[in-house]
Length: 433
Image 1 (cartoon, rainbow, N blue to C red):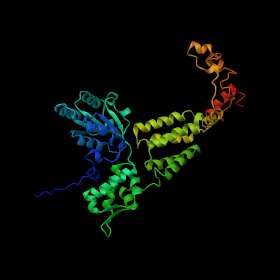
Image 2: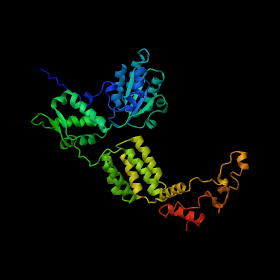
Image 3: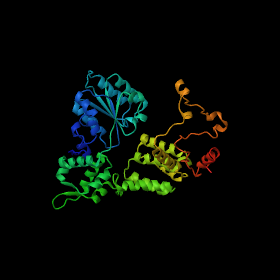
């Protein structure tokens, strides 16, 4: 019985994977002239390293290109599919090779998923110089990688690819890939393709390949990738949102103003728009930290720690799971009592400083670490509040002589600031009536 051999063509992203460092697009801060990785290759001494960055930024590509450029053998493992037994087999093979500066590189994808025992096995091999480790991760390695192993690796942060980078990669594919060039692919709507890619080269090439396969050739045998064809290829409706344009700032503004207006549902809608469009989640988290102090402040002191914890959670878990703490934080901030008293207060204080110019720190508030300073009156007559009833010294003065006492901070009694205002009225009745 005759058998049929089916020829499988690798995906476009694999066909276009660079084979040398000079072919890699992007990450110029690492690979460009004078960049650390470029220098390691030139010097022929490659250290262990961890490549940390979003999906599609070239972590695997860079690892393979490093080894190809330096002429070093690479063993590849996936932390998802490989166990301790697989790792030990790789280390044993590497140990059988005589040690030299071009020792085996072990590339581990998703290294943050390795267990403690797997990371310990890696640590011993790296310490003994049996292997050079290159790990790839989308997660913050400070949280996920054994501290001892991390201390023996250089950590390099990869950046999302720019639109120019993605365009260069796509154009190179259209012009040099034998399959695409034979199809005469023409990208009509770059903005749609770039937006659908979200800074991810793999996503860009996958969208390009799928769209080219469904586009109908015209009378000139050209396949035009219009917005409609591209969206049909990825089965996703394009959001009216440009991460670098006016809509980016308009949507961020709408999110902030909805939270300020205490509408958690509208705030969630704008958060969803930003997430769906591929917005950097750390950009959103930074805005939430600012909002927590600017618009809530002491009305609910839990807001700032929660917003800060949200930023840290995003750094640790990434997306898409990061949408959950983002949603929790947004709904909390939108539903919290509001006060901009601290924000207004620091603005007023800065104005006073700029208007007054140089100020003289009162002698009783100055530090007096030496006997000479004490003899000059530094710290004299300062009364330690914790020794006074209620931990407050009535009539004590803390303003410099050039600035009359001003109540920069004016809480109006919202949320937890009601108790703050009551205390201030007891302590400073002439300032808070």
